[in-house]
Amino acid sequence: MPNYGNDNTKRVARQTNNPITQVNPGQDDDDSDDAAAAAHYNIQEHIPKEPLLPPQFKKHTNKNCLVLDLDETLVHSSFKHVPGADFIIPVEIENVVHQVYVMKRPGVDEFMKRVGQLFEVVVFTASLSKYADPVLDFLDIHKVIAHRLFREACSTHRGSYVKDLSKLGRNVATSIIIDNSPHSYLFHPQNAIPVQSWISDMNDTELLELLPLLEDLSKVTDVVPYLATARMNGYRKPSS
Ligand SMILES: [Mg+2]
Image (tube, rainbow, N blue to C red; front, side, top):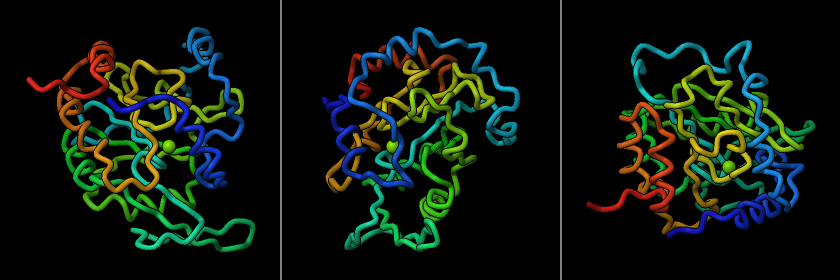
């Protein structure tokens, strides 16, 4: 079973120290408050005045909502030259144009194609839109991403960005988030599928291994009990 611990995420956050993708600038190494934060989550504070997403497109009616993180979940980006990068995105920061080298996680194209058939797909990233929007233009070859949400759509908790599913304007019971950073789903851990942070391992198979589970999750009317069971199987569907 893969290791879903936080150590890798923290290491990545420190390693990348990347102003456009860094998701948790204020994150310290103490997660002991996370449970307390979840316990004190006040639903009233999270009912949105204006939902983050527009109404569902007709073609997504009755489809569950799959929220995908971008960096270290679907791709990895670097300011340093990466030979064989899948895309190179020019990003201007303080009047200087930087080349950002983007690598796709193995299996991401097939993964996106299938989840696009099963779900209303939303990419929700804590990165800046001036970087993430062009990355998604390149990444979304099957045109399956229904909506894109960037840093300004995130909530903050103790200096870290949190993706608050209750602000989407979708039924939380039928919403799932896949994210390498547990901080991102601090308010809805019961809706989350953790994935290991991906940097460069070309033998990584996480995305494709999640598809059998996602096939099932696309059909349920409440993802929470299903994910509670899946958690015990390491988020992999046991072979029957
Ligand atoms: Mg991430």
